[in-house]
Length: 249
Image (tube, rainbow, N blue to C red; front, side, top):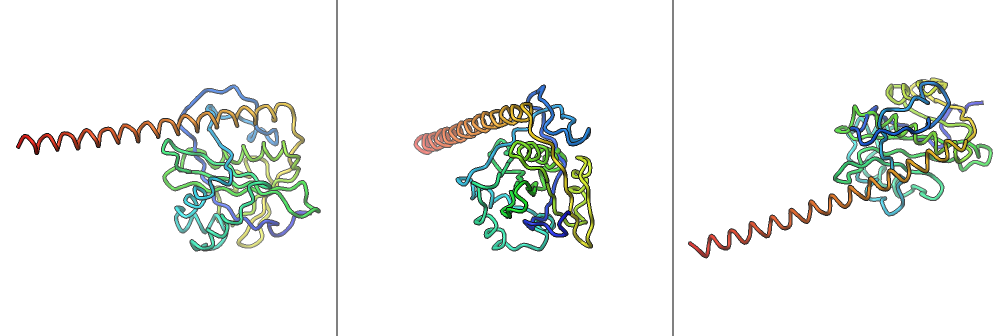
């Protein structure tokens, strides 16, 4: 029986965005739930696992959501204090938090895969996602969904839930395309997906994607540090020029 209310009470907001080409992978499907869900995109998006040391970045991301997006993500008009409490309560050991970063290391899209704490739903997990307004139109919401589905399969999850406001058509569209069953209950909808067992293919694909994301993040961090170094050099040079100009005057 499908619960009428989310066991983790996470209402979601999603964007369907696609990162500009980074590489041309020949990766196996993230999930064989349906033909639509198993169809691989042309590029690999670096989706990185987020740890507790990046809790502040998660808070910054969620606090930057526009009011309507925050409403869709949490299912109510969450205040800054509500958001901070949510972030403080994140369990990085039990759950999985995924993120997509831009070249400035800004967390522009984030997903929360929450595993059930109820022994009766030990093989269940729920998905929540948010994408900043300026990062929309690139398939990030759908890509995070695929990544979460693959990780859930590899962790033995058999029932994958998405609890969303009925007006959150983007999220529900992503779920339907993956083959999820969507049941509406007034202003809220419950989507659920039955996941097949993990395979060697899904485990190896997740490992490759994890390594790719870590390398990508390291390169972005190095590039950011180098840009900051150059900016510092330019500032020093400008100061020297001004000092010379004054001395010459």
